[in-house]
Image (tube, rainbow, N blue to C red; front, side, top):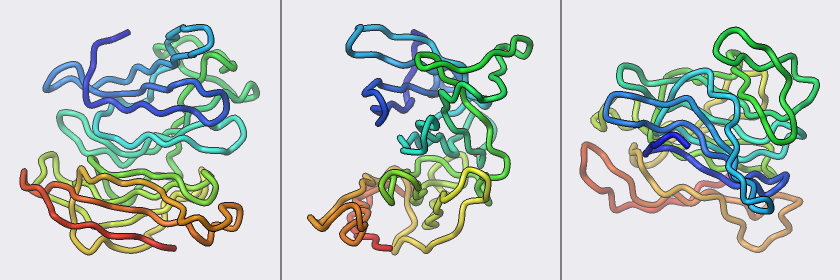
Length: 219
């Protein structure tokens, strides 16, 4: 396991394994490596790396067949990223690029990241939220920063509906900010209908100042 911080980790919906991706090893070095922890066998297995090293990105589990998760945005030492990558274990996937020379197909225990140039953001963002909505088939990008530091907060809301189309603008936060607590919630209504789903956004940071604001986002 490669030492890191400011990485992201989620439990995958399909098999309960934990996906760990990206982060940084020091103040100037972002990472592309990723791992999965399998609790039944107590194994931590290296996966194919991200196409772009990134930290402060969002990592969201999805329910799209063998496409299990999506990484959006983030940054490295010199650039705020707008790219989107999907983590796939689809056996028919054309291939994963390992160190630029070996092509192989993903498997149930070793997935790969597929770059999605058609599904990129209009502009780079980091420190945003990325909750899943619509029964884990869509992802909302919430706030974040468009500058390399925290002086450029964003209030933008973007919706990832398709892996083959750009994210769609769906609104604005009342207060632009990043590093918020962002979570999908259901108010007790039938989740299959989606009528009670909303996103809760609490707190955040603008230029190293905490924000005292809580808002509920509904579709």
